[in-house]
Picture 1 (spheres, rainbow, N blue to C red):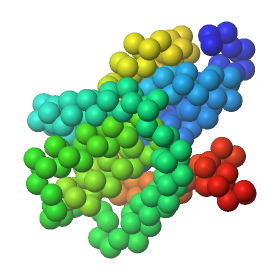
Picture 2: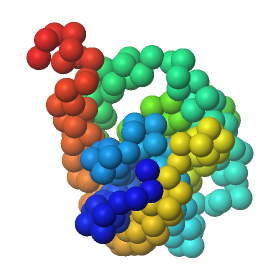
Picture 3: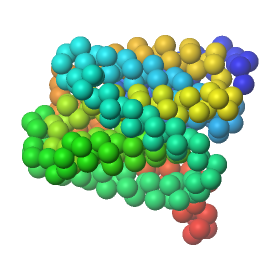
Picture 4: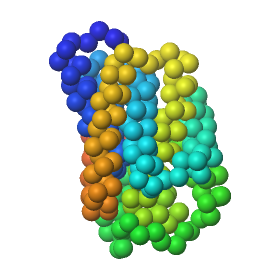
Length: 261
């Protein structure tokens, strides 16, 4: 779907800027971009594919911003990025086989649990803590697993990366955010390649939204680096709760269907 009115196009640009801003700090940009694309008349698969295209710009923008300030060593993290991209590509390939209803049903509860973890865990700041999983095992197991999820379904992947880095790798919030953006870029890239091959991406609007998301991510990442955990923690909690609420209130959510709500 390429022919959009000027009003719809401007709304999508505004949604992309906001998505880039939020995603660069706490993840969850898809919560804003995908519904906006659906409201504009795109089919679900077109919305997912186009979101991966425009999401590349936002995650790349944030990654570069954090790397320039020394919060992430891109070269050292390339193996993890490759595993994230591979997992996402496999997830996108299997998206038609894996029952998405399972993810849609249980994801809200997982997101609420993540929100509670970050809201009430003591000493949630920018200081690194003891890691519970070696870097080798974290990269080999956790990274491709979340990348796979991002490819096959998507919403909340950034929050899962954040949780993994903080709870298992022992990273402080700012460092976790910086590394999350790199792996999110890689997972977006892996899924994007598959969606592009299938031919479900709206290139024109995706590139326009990508430019807006790039700008939003620049603003958000700079704000995060300036304020650290003071802004990352509350925005992460709000994003998780908002995404959970959006999924629960969706009429197509399996939980609502199962219980006749």
